[in-house]
Amino acid sequence: MADIDLSAEIRDLRATFADIQHVVDAPKLNHEIAVLKEQATDPNIWDNPVHAQSVTSKLSHKQAMITKLESVQSRLDDLEVLVEMANAEGDSSVQSEAKAELTALQEVISELEIQTLLNGEYDSRSAVVTIRSGAGGDDATDFAEMLMRMYLRYAEKHKMPYQVLDTSYAEGAGIKSATFEIDAPFAFGTLSVEAGTHRLVRMSPFGAAGKRQTSFAAVEVVPLVEQTEAIEIPDNEIRIDVFRSSGPGGQSVNTTDSAVRITHIPTGTVVSCQNEKSQIQNKAAAMRVLQSRLLEIRRREEDAKKKQIAGDVKASWGEQMRSYVLAPYQMVKDLRTEHEQNNPNAVFDGDLDGFIAAGIRWRKQTQLGA
Image (cartoon, rainbow, N blue to C red; front, side, top):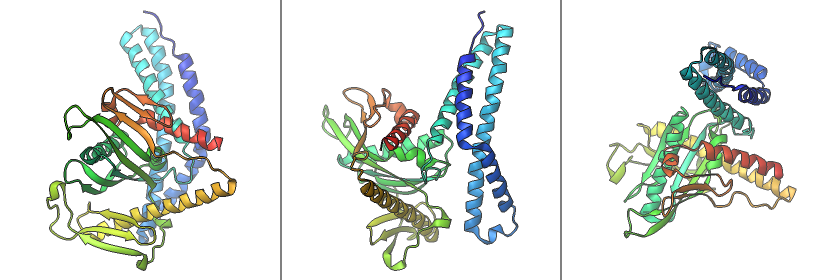
């Protein structure tokens, strides 16, 4: 049996991985972990639960990155040994195993490479994602629910913990809106390229037979505000309403008025939460999301001022950023990056890596061009 030669591929992976290690700066990361560990072992740390939670969360995220780097380094070393073993024994199954591991490592290192491009001020944060149905009636509300499932499946596949905070069900099919947190390192930087207007074209299951229907849904992604930098919101700037949680078709989920809706009067921003069992918990979660949205509004205002000062009048992403076509042909295409995939079912099942990677690279190129 002929030997397999993966030396060129492994050499390329090592070169890319070396660049990643340089950008991540592992020695600095280890120093930060040591400092956070020392803070976490302070017996008085839980006297301030907010600070304690911030420290433990940062420690967990940084340790996860170091563990990933160490794992990749070990797997690269093991892959070379595996190739040598496969060739020495002339074992086709071991050769197949080596090729499969090479492919897996290429995917992992590609993900790490993309992550090194996420160096924005808030990119390392967790994310708050809100999906709202747009024009298109029942098709639009159904589409909004399809997008929600798509992002939650993406989170599950990447082992990113999530929590659904609020869901507003439509009278017919699907949802009017939904808000959920994805609590993972770089969740905001990764998913922020998904923000914008999404369009679905298909044969409507709700309308007359044989007619195509176009519907729209909007995706908003904001960074989760850290407790230590929470925006102060005066009581006279908010209105708090309480109501009973409800599920599909108005079915009662809670027999008490535990759901909370908070309106920020100056900006008109409205946030609701009905996931938790108590009104106090729902209010705390809703305030956290409100602060995150106000932080994003402030960031956008600051960016707009910077662009005005710099004389940058280029358009940003535009309204419609991706089309999902199910009829008369099958295709999902990002209109900014031109990245496309001919398997919409896989995309709706959370296969978004190609679109997200292309989006992050496109955004970086756009920033450099500006």
